[in-house]
Length: 297
Image 1 (cartoon, one colour):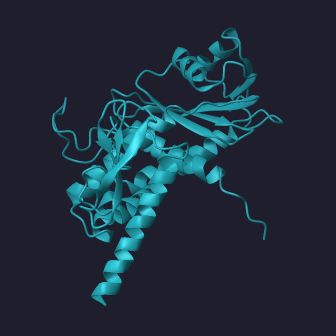
Image 2: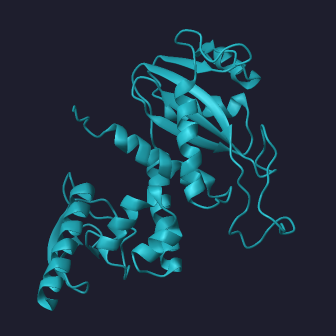
Image 3: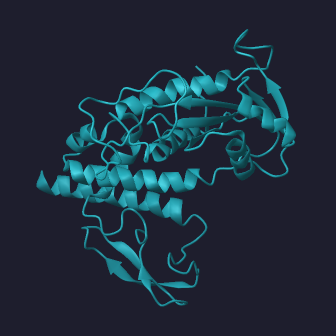
């Protein structure tokens, strides 16, 4: 039985390594230090119980393997637990994951933080292309300074109780601006310390193709009035009278808000300083689901 278990673990580790190789080196092996593809094989590393191919770069003369300069490098946590953490992080709390994976909470916390950090960097590069029909709306999340060691205020005797309606970052109710492209269903979230039309236009400029024809849909909030003067076609639905006027609505944004809120509830409180990384985590999993093939029953 022990031999079978050891063989199974080795097999799973090999599968994990192959997945990393396919994702990282789909266009060929390159040096993670200088990006050169002039590399040669340089023995094996079997410190983790599985042989991992080592390489040497002819350009910078450094050695590396597939885990070098990734979140998996020098980690004593088995790869299969890392992969399980990645797959379950979107729908579970860190406390649950630490118990499920049988690892210390501090290790689970650090793993989750590294995963969110990598995903945030990649999601921050997302750009919408083609003809874009862009719904824009904002939501407000009660999010204080949970987990922060150096508070800029006296600690609360009870949990955060934010007032209804709009809030501000300073008052622990930051705004999250949501973009949804109706054509691709791609979704993006931006946590803004200072909510204004100029910030929204700046995010549009950074995350849409310069050649794209863009039509925007918003509610009657005054800050969106700057979109037309910035050169975007702008259509408005007035929520004082109606939720939709033909195809003029922001129902897709409101749908994303209804999904993001319970996603954050599962995390049992999120610091406003980490809120963007959690929003990016949800954004990543949601947009990944859009790429899955649909099955007709």
